[in-house]
Amino acid sequence: MRALTEVATFVGPLSFVWDDDAIGIDAAGNPCRGAVTRSWFAARSKVKTQGTTYVPADRATGDLKDVIAAVRRWSDGDADALNPVPVLQVGSEFRQKVWQALRRVPGGDVVTYQQLAKNAGNSTAVRAVGTSMAVNAVAPFVPCHRVVKTGGEVGNYAYGSEMKVEILLREGLIVD
Image (tube, rainbow, N blue to C red; front, side, top):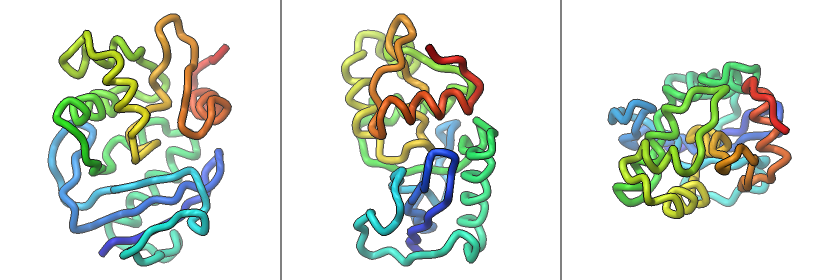
């Protein structure tokens, strides 16, 4: 089943598509069945998806119920609650390595684009890391909010730098 679900979080609604037929990747890079395939910090009414069934969060069952519980724990302050949730997004081999490396950054920590490039196996690919963050379709499951500029400046975020700061503060970071 492919389900669209909306969960209230501390930064507003998080809508996501869960596909229990997809072979996703967990934070350790292991393949596993079922995956979040797209997410938005937006109400489901603003999300255009076809081929999905809306499942209210309070009516979810099975693995989808577990994913919703993880989102709620994350929203309540458990910065690592989303780590085990499998994700699936299309991208080159290098992008997959970037996203996997990013999922290993613990909540409450940040990494620079340079460090993330090195962790993904190519320390000179800083711009490619930036592009990987820009096309990340499953935030906050792949926590691109944890990537900062060299020198610690917060930098950009698809949902605005204010939301990025709010998420980082919730994860225990002091942000200037």
